[in-house]
Length: 216
Image (cartoon, rainbow, N blue to C red):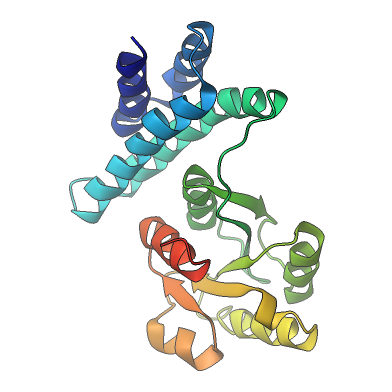
């Protein structure tokens, strides 16, 4: 019975049915299933499969977004029960994500945040058009060990470098890993500004984040 429900939870993510996900999660709780098992044996396996299909070219960005949305909806039901019961998922790290100052693009950053949360990270999304100093402040407030700075415009890429410099000036650069992303961002740009890594999409961002915090 439990295995059947885990498979249903995985499938609702793989197929991409966010409107059904919360109800299915509640059904699992009503059956007395452990919420942590529902996440680890159901939802997480589903989102991992979505990632595999995206990486192989069988799924595209809309499939990734809707699968992540389904998982997010189910987690919204399961995680409060975990917290109330004194349980918790293993937390790999705490990431602060934002789109740099002067840039209002949101979809890619939001998707990365959802995927990181689905893979065991605590995520603080500080929004778009975020000044470098606010990244530093958010890292301090949340004890973050990972920063994700997104820039979708060539005219705002320099803000990623400014963020790194601001962390250096604050004496925090050695305490955080900084990853950068966005359409115009390349490995050479990442190396030039001294970032710890760059990701071209949400799936590679998760893999990079795990490497940067020593979880992969």
